[in-house]
Structure formats: structure tokens, C-alpha cells
Image 1 (cartoon, helix red, strand yellow):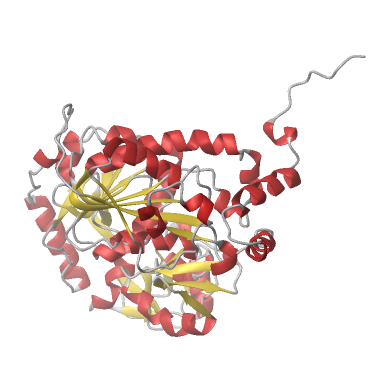
Image 2 (cartoon, rainbow, N blue to C red):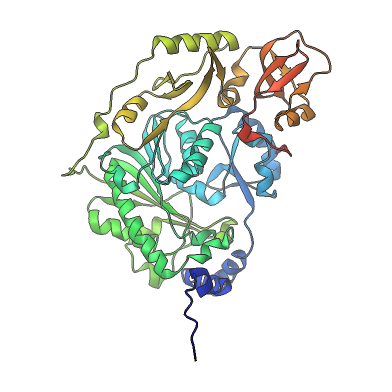
Length: 493
């Protein structure tokens, strides 16, 4: 009898239902009793609620708090994170999203940054940053002060990452595109804090996306762990003594979490300090499993979806006890200290914008305004040095303005962040007019206005965007970026 020898894909080899059963059984072994396993199993087949995190870098975000307090509950570990009874697709169509006042993000991923606790003025690395939720949360904690190196090794994921950094008003970031292990060639005992949100199997997000079942297996998780161990060792190399490394995944398995921590301990046991996470009370592992690991591992956090109604995640907080002398170095970012000087051209551009919009462009002490490639940037003073010495450099800072012919126009990000500070002519829009703007259509005013040229457009006491008056003040054209166009614009509140 002839046998069918046609190769089968990984998805065809094992049915999806069987894969899901194997995954739930594998993870269920980490729970203490049958009641917990049943609750986890039931939760894993229902979608999680839509969640968002307020972006404190945009001052207008504060106005959303009263409405969000009525719409949902904040996460116990992150007061800016809210779970809502709203479809996630609707959130992306809200005017508040376009303004950068919130980021669509599940509650579970926010714990890693809260544990990292980055501070203004520090050097911080987000090692695997796309799509940008944790990077924008880090920048908000830092209040755009200090240096944030945001790295993403996959070029296809960079546009989303950069778009979110821009929309959320992040100015202190230097974006790079390097493999995580390669970064250790240039940063030696350099960063105060590092977030390694490692690429993983994603077994913790099965309730959100069951497509991960196509690739999941215990064997695959073990292979993932080999790569993750290389990343965590590289991250530890880059951490300064006394600094904090947070290792996180959206996986719940031992293979990609505790086993990875063991891989770091085996290499740097005398220097590694696994610290307890005090802002989160984690369900302990069964005793027979917990005894396989050092007692300090009980201080790590595992977010179970059925206990917190979110996705699954693992978070570990790691300290570095002492200095390490590295034998081989290809570069040393500590020497990239030269600071960029403000050019006469930039000074003239800034003066013209400040005169037109009647306000002083904010510029923190460790930042500067610089003109480069037809744009006016607000960026950290060492950005130019990174551009020269860091081979994986992509860009740094936030675009404040763009030159068209001889004139500089303010960016949407600048208007969202600082529009309330500008003492310049404004027009109040109706909701219908605002919807026209976000469909790329101009607005015909009921009566011509004596104003001319560029104005600010407001709605409901919020600065929305720039507008340009045309046809003797009868037509108002909204300068809304194309990526924010929506046929069905909505309001969060």
C-alpha cells in the first residue's frame, strides 16, 4: 500500500485543539490545584478586555482621568493602565489616540516597566523595543529627561516603533537596529537600567492570539530559551554596578523564564542579585517545582490571566553587585561624550517659530534643538555622537518642525504637547468639522474670519492640530497627518 509522503506544515501536523490542550496542560502544572487549573483553562479561551495606558508626556492626557475612572478599573501596579469594556479596534479610532494621550496596551506588559522604575536623568536601554508600548512608558517615567536607547533588531518592526515614539512625544530616545548580543560590544557597564522584554513563544497571550499555537511546543520553548540566555547575558554585561535589569516575557513557562535566569546565574553567579518584586504579589509555584530553583526566584512575578483578567507575563528584577572588567571591547559608549552645539541656522529657525506661535519651545537642559534633513529636532545632546560612533543608529529625538521651501511648520507632535502654551489665534471646531479634518477634507466656515494663514484648531478645550485659512478666510484646511485619517473618528469620552 502506498503511503502519502507529502510534507506537512507544522500547523497541519498537530490540530489546533490538540496544541491548545497540550499548552494548557503544560502551563497548568505550574498552578497549585485543580480549581486554579480549571479557572486558567476557562480564561484562556476567552478574549481579554481592551486596555490602554495614559501617556503622561502629553499634558492633555490628564483630562481623560475622570472618564476612565467611570469606564474601567486601573491596574493595581500601574495607575495609568485601565481595562475597558470597549472593543480594541474602536480605541485606535479615537481622537485621543491620534493626539498621543494614550497607548493601547494590555495591563500585564506594564508591570515590567513599573518594576524597572526608570528615573529622570538616567541612562536606560529598552533592548527589544517594538512596537513601543514599554519604550513610551519608560520615557514617561523619565519625563523625557536622561538618555533612552531604544533598540529593535527587526527592520520591518521599526516603522511602528518610530511612529509610536513620535505620536507619544518621546524626545530623549536614540533608536537603534542591532541584534541584542551585538550591543554588548559598545556598551560596557553603561546603563543604569535595562529592560529586556525578550522575544518568546508567546504562550501567555494565547487568549488574545491563538495563532501562536502554530509554532508552540516544549521543544520550541527550549530553543527560544537558548537565544534568551544569550540576550540576558549581553544585557547584564551592559548594566552598571548597582543598576537594575528587568527580564520579562509574555510566556508563563519555566523554560523561558526561570531556566533563563539559571543560564545567567551559571555565568555570573557572584554578581547576580535576584531582587524581590514588592509591587506585585505572585502566586507561588508548587513546592516540588520551586525547590528546583534558588530561593531568590520566589521574588519573581508571574501574571496569570485568570487572576488578573489580562494576558500572561513573567517579570524578574535583577541587580548587579560589582564592576566587571571586560577583556574584549570593540567600542565604548562611555567615550561618546561630545555634545552637539546649536548652530546659527537652528537659532534663527527657533526664533522664527517662537515669534509666530508666541511661546518658548521647551528644551530640557540635557536636550538641544537641531536642524537636520529638513527637520527641526528636539533631542538629547549626545545624539550626534551616537550617530557618528554607533553603527546601528537609526535616528534620535522628536521632530518639532519641517521645512517647506523657506518656512518651518510645527509638527503634529509639537502641537499635541505644547499647543496649550501657545498664545496664537485659534478657531474652535464642531465635532462634524473635526471629523472632516480626519477624513482629509477642508472645512467651509459659516462666515469668513479676519484671520489669515496658520492657526490652531481646538475642540472641547483641547488643541487638536494646525489649520491653514484659505480663500479669504472662508476655507479652513486641517493639517492632520495622513496616518491619523479615520473615516469613523470617535471620542473616548
